[in-house]
Structures are given as C-alpha cells and as structure tokens.
Image (cartoon, rainbow, N blue to C red; front, side, top):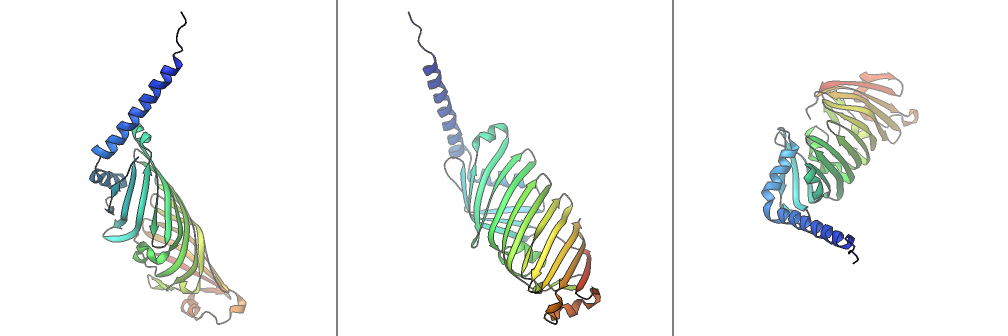
Length: 270
C-alpha cells in the first residue's frame, strides 16, 4: 500500500496556523488594545519629561493602522510642531520580538511629512522627510527667535542619541535676528541649506550656507548644552555697493572690504 504524500497536509496545517495567528493578532488589536492604551504607549516611547505629545482624533484601523486628526509636540508648555491628518502603519510581527517598526505620513499645512520608525528597547531609529514645508508653520522656529517664511525640504536620520539633518530653504524671508545684543541681518538672504549633526548634548553645524542676490554667508560652530559657539561670515560682492544698508549695523565686525565675521557666543534655549 502506497503511503500518502504528507506535504499537502503539512502545507494545509501551516496555512491554518498562519491564518489562526493572523486572526489572533487582528483580534487583539481590534478588541483588547484601546485607543487610550495606544496613546499612553506612544507617550511612554517618547520617554522625555521635557517633551510631551498630544494626540487629537486618534482612531484604530484594520491591520495595525492608526489615524489621528492632529499630533502636537510640546516642550516646556511651548508648541514645537504639529502634524495633521496623520496615518501610521505598524508591522505587528515585530511586536513578538518586543520591537516596533512602522511608517507614517501627515501634513503640515500644505507640506508633507513622512518617515519610518523603529524602536528596540530604548533605542530609536528614525528616518523623517519634510517636503515643501513653510517654516512659518513650524512654531519651534519662532520659539527660538526665528520669524519669517520660506519653503523647507529636509531629511532627518536619527539613531540613539545622534542624528543628521540635511536641509534646504528656498524663497527665504527672515526678519533680523537679535541674539545677546547682536542683530544678525538675516533679511538679506533668500536661500539657505546645509548639514547639521545632532549629538547627545547639542548640535554641531557641519556646513550651513546662506545666499542672497549679490551676497553670501556661512555659519559654522556648535551649540552644546544650550551654549552657542558660532561664527557667521558675511561676504557681499564688490558690485553690490550700498545695496545692503543692514550691513551698517555690523560695521564693527568688518574684517576687510567685503568680509564680515560675527562671533556668536550666547545661551540658546532649545
């Protein structure tokens, strides 16, 4: 008597097992885990006493999807940034490994923010992309003193306590920035871009260039433990002549014709 091939039976049992596990996962998500539980889990993951997150209109969807009308990040009772129409998709199988992996997207007014997030224990890896964001719609910039508008495109990679920010800002229109009695004539520039390294105790500016019509600038240095140690160089073209009366305010920092160097040593509270 020929023995039956066990392979089809094995495949059928495997499929039934996968379907059963999937139904359990979906059932746990839909029935056991409430919106309040998800909200508290997100707050716990932030793990920062100075930073809190407020979520409005949170709703669960099928297959570990989340939607929120608005997500607001607040630090020391100051609004940092808010994202609307947020959608997040989690990979449930990473939960069995006590890990989190998800992708998300949302809007900041007319701009788009999207990214990928992975959490293992207390270690966080994030890759976040900002596209066509008007900087006036980012409250955090006004909190630290920048007022104006411009279109931001940026990539942020963050892992553990370190990260990299690459960005460009077009159609830049800033108001003069006053810092410890020094008025920086930022209104003369209409474009900015560069790379900033995030470190555990502050930021280090690897390269940050500023550009206007007939004038250029470069910012370098660091802000560690809220203490700025920066240098701003401003270089107008010779042909610019008296096109930039704002430069008269920084005449004391003129090193040579067409070259200004402004040391910035002050406390900056993030």
